[in-house]
Each structure stands twice: as C-alpha cells, then as structure tokens.
Image 1 (spheres, helix red, strand yellow):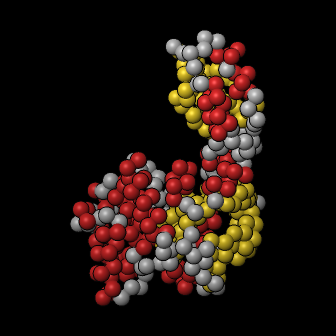
Image 2 (cartoon, rainbow, N blue to C red):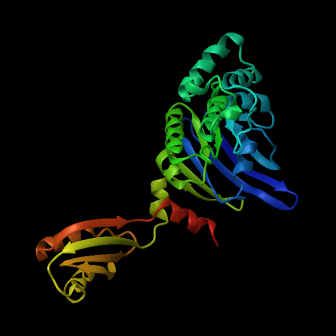
Length: 314
C-alpha cells in the first residue's frame, strides 16, 4: 500500500504551512517524519488522512486521490492524532466497539477484532476500565487500537509516544516495529533515538519544505562533519603531551590532539579527526608498536540529532 505526495501545498492566508513538497512511501516501510514545531508535519498528515484539504498538489493512497476518493482512502488509513482524542467516560471495550462501528465493520467481525486488538496492544488488564482512569501509556495504546481496529493498510501516527515514560516508549516502539512488517507507517516524533531504532527512512521538513530524505545512516554520513576519537592509554610516560601527542598527530586523518587528563601513568586524549576519516586501526597499530596499553577507544560520529539541528536552524 503506497502513498504518493506530489507538489503538496497548504496555505493559511498568506502563510505557507506546506510548500510544494513531494515524496513517496512504499508498502511495508516505516517513515520517520521529522521537523521542528510549525514545520508542516501535522498539516501534511492531516491532508493525507483526508482530515483537511490541500490548497494545491495531489495525494494518492494506493492510487486513490484523497480529494476524489476521500471515503475510500479513509477506509485504508488508521490515524492516531497528536492529542489522541478519546471518550474518557467509556470503558476500553465500549470505545473499541464504537470505533469499529464508525468504520462500518460487520457485527460478526467486531468481537473478534476487538479481542485481537486488546491482545496486540496489551490492554487485557484494563479492558473493562473507563478510559479516563487509565495512565497516559494505556491511553496511547487505546489510541493505537482504535487506529488499527478496522485492519487498515496504512498507519499515520502523530507523536505516538508523547508524554510516555521510557518503559512505555520502548513498548510502543516495539509495537510499531511489529506493525511495520505488514503495513505502511508514517511516524512523526521529536524523539530522534526513537526514529533511529524504529524507522527505515527519515524525511525532515523545515518551514514547509523537505530538507532531507534518506535512511538514518545515510543522513548521518551525508551531513557528518569532523569526528573525534577518545583514547585512554596506559604508558607510564610522565610527559604525554611531549612524548605521545606528537605521535598521535602524525596519524593520517588526525587534525589535532587534546590531552584530557593524566593519572598514575594513564593518559586520556581526544583526537579530532577529519571528515570521513577512520583512524582507529592506525591508532591501535601505533599503540602496539609503542607498547601502550589501550584502556578505552571510543569514536564519536555525527548523530541524527546533529543532522536535525544543522538542517532546521538558520
């Protein structure tokens, strides 16, 4: 089930919330949709889900236009909005039955599907409780269950782990990864470690325009700057700045060397490395040749957070 977005634009008066963006999402792909607040993420997701119309451009879900075939598109999509609107006075089972009826499911299917969603989303222990009594984590699970109750082929999830504790984030993340094996998923979040752990591909939007598109690994590679290598050595040398630093600086790809500290014959260095260079093997071979004992070697590469910052700040 693919999604095709072409030259999508949304205007609010003179302001362009979305500025002529185009992208595709393939069947079975989990797309991380990133951007700062006000970048146009939620607006784009609302247009894909037929919640609001675009000003211009087209969106097709499985070849169906969101304008011309809106009702057919909605049947194929499960949507978890950022604020997760729920009826707090209903219990979990009542709410899921209500959601299934809204999607026009046949009565004989509803009972089986509710049991399946209660199991998949881990709601067994709270299925008879009123939604208003549930923790934020369980309410998010109920929101996911309603998004999936009609067995949609596409899931649009806007900040699905917002406000959750670390344990709940891991649980929801694992659930999304499991769902992504069989569905097309667009996931919006500000938690970049979650994107790295969950998404096959990342699309970054800023001021209504797409500024990056690729796998997390490719974006880190494309936008990386200088890197660093922390090296802790036991050498017994009393003056490491004079006797060790010059040798480390001689390694090809090393720009500069900084002594971070020295204690009882142990020295910690920070090697500032040129873009794209990996000096770990050379550093290891030099340590062996010089008789230094390596206690730690840690390479710090460009993170997805740094890529995001570079692309979304002026």
